[in-house]
Image (cartoon, rainbow, N blue to C red; front, top):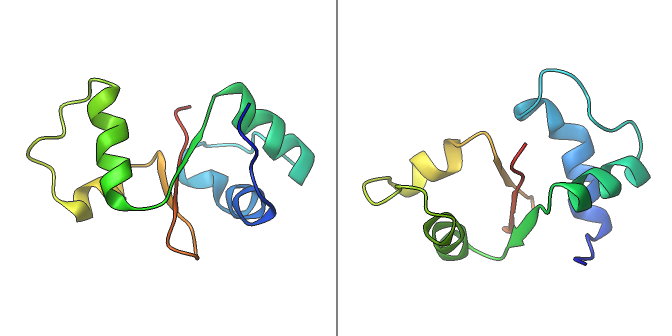
Amino acid sequence: MYEYDEEVLEYFLAHQSQLFSENVAESVEEAEEFLEDCMAVVCKNLKEVRDYFDEAGMDIAGMSEDELLEASEVFALPDGRFLIVEG
């Protein structure tokens, strides 16, 4: 099981509307449970984001870094990491 740190949980809680039309979590605890349930991944850089999508079989070959960042399931964390949530 992946451990999500406080920054990841609080950022997802504050920005969940990026991916979902209504809130899926109302507290940090609910955010953690939701991220665990959907097996969200934290990547330390864009290369890891690209590798993740490649391994998942998504066709991202022609996508620029900006296009990757615009994907609704990619959350750019303030510390430079990325949270990928497949809803």
